[in-house]
Image (cartoon, rainbow, N blue to C red; front, side, top):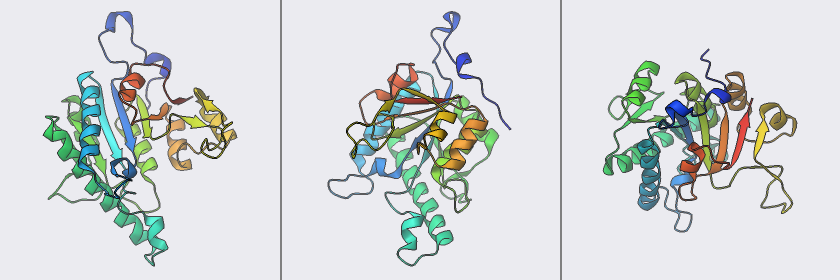
Length: 255
């Protein structure tokens, strides 16, 4: 089991003030992040380039970036069950959808000069590298963005679980979950205008309050390995930069 540094040890010290606050982070993005809801396009080129430009700014800070993407804009295993596709087959179809998204994001990143590698848990050497932990870490150390596709490679596990697993394996200092909301609320803010947004919350408090930050397996993996999570609005300009600069953005879940 890989142990990461406690949050208190991740702060920038005076003698290393030019170093990024977090050396290595894993970003979790849902497949819907690539979708244009206005015209229904599953992979919008303008959205992909805007995401790539945000990630370029992170790389320019000197932070090593790994990404796990979902596939919900193309196919979801659970949705497939309603169409007569059995859950296991549907989950594998969803994993393939994450690879499509991974390749699309890789293309957008490379168009703006960012060296990128796609690694998959399901072997498909014609389009991507197989996931090998040491190789992934080496890519990160060389300044490449690494995109992890096909989830964990196993049915019945979400891409949240894949994000927590890969963050643990690569020794990420932080898992950041980019969403379209600005943090974690006590209840759905769209339904309850009095919902309270948390600035910080402990793992145990999140469990006690039954806050659905990630699925249970993913959340437990982060908690066991002391990986802090920040949930924030990825689509607010430069919000990810503020997160990585340590500004009070979104909601931090910590030990």
